[in-house]
Image 1: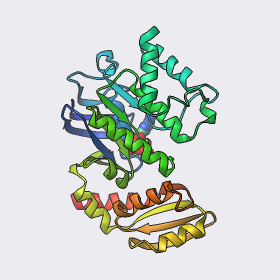
Image 2: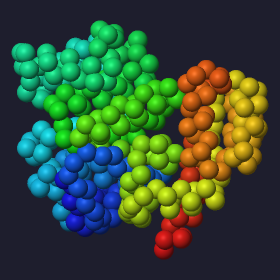
Image 3: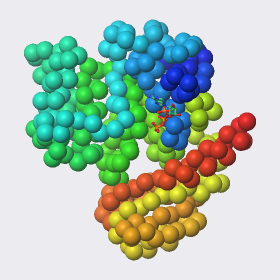
Length: 306
Ligand SMILES: Nc1ncnc2c1ncn2[C@@H]1O[C@H](COP(=O)(O)OP(=O)(O)OP(=O)(O)O)[C@@H](O)[C@H]1O
């Protein structure tokens, strides 16, 4: 379905993606694209979704070059990074506008909007304006937009950024469901724990280079040896009491309305943390991995793989 042959991307003198070669087969399933900020994830996803042409090498999606190619674009859906939406607009009206832009009209448009809203579980709230929606709801509407034309390939750039734990779990369940029904999904993240909850297949990018391709097991083992820092924002005292009971805790420091914990085995503690927060067991408002630390882990990985 996707073939990259020494594909690279330059922004003037800056190399966004070094010559990269890999293949993703046809059929459903989720592949995670993992790497810290600036690793080249967005660059790779922009090449695949036809937003930019490669500076060198070859990119093929469904057997064709995707750049400005309607035949390819009709078969893929993109949820770009960020949360940019026309704030005062109703979600259903925005979806209709987007559908019209992609050539849908009349009954086909009505049906596509209704089906996409139902898929993301937002049919009863689509009359709300974006201002009145939570970030998680907006993200689901953005996903609905990407799904409206029934894409075989769905590309999401850092879709979990800034979502609360419950919204994160909802979005993950949606993606798993779509993949099981046959959609091929490529999702980027800078958090291994997120990717590991979704799939076992990852592409690991660092400083514009594809470092590894395969299962998460090897990467997990390396990460487990290196503590990862997480900032838990909410009622700091209560969060700290929860954190000290966790066997993975390596260090902790308090901030005004947050606690920063350093944990080993993030793959073990993250699902427990998300579940506790989703069930109201802990007063968690936000969960942020601290990139500085992740960057150190990636540097460690690059040394190992050099
Ligand atoms: N439009 C641009 N102009 C110049 N340099 C860019 C541009 N976009 C990305 N870069 C550079 O290319 C490199 C790869 O960036 P890219 O956005 O692909 O990484 P990323 O892994 O998606 O990170 P992030 O999550 O921070 O977006 C970085 O050095 C970045 O500064």
